[in-house]
Length: 250
Image (tube, rainbow, N blue to C red; front, side, top):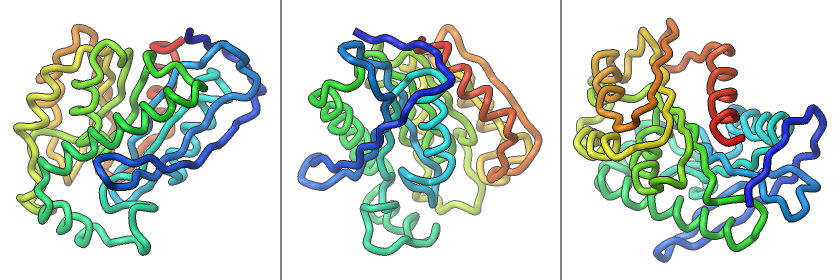
């Protein structure tokens, strides 16, 4: 049973753990409200962007907001060739080269399996309602979040995507292009969706972002846009993401 009640003062419990998915470890982090008793909170999945990790400032800030303001648990994993999957961090060129070598579509499939294994592990912990899910992931978080969202089906109630599209600029290696995979996944997404566009995005052109929004299969999809380049995020936008998911899960 999922329960969530808004409150201004909730202790945040953090749990770092690692699960195995198809023979490789997946580093994960779970944040949840204390004192839920037998009433499991909903769960929001947080996908970080390129060169980030599961404990980057944006992810931790989002997790604490959901726990403290909405009594919603949060879960994050390290992306491919990011965070604790490595002994030393890689530059963007280095991890992009490794993804290209493995095959960008293969990495998408691997990440879906990693998310599934981690969600299953949380189910076994019996601390959150893993049949009531939300998702926030932009840029690389959308690249791997959209295929996951398509697979989660009705378990996913709401999602925030963006800073990503069906076209990429020459700043990214051509081998990273997963437009066909992304388009097919977007068509299968049925959850309420908020899509964030950076109007002056130099990595994923605006036209391709609009095309991705059009491809989303959800009957309830909304688009927000803010001026700025790919790496910029207005604080108001973060508040919109938070309120959208909180409303969808509570």
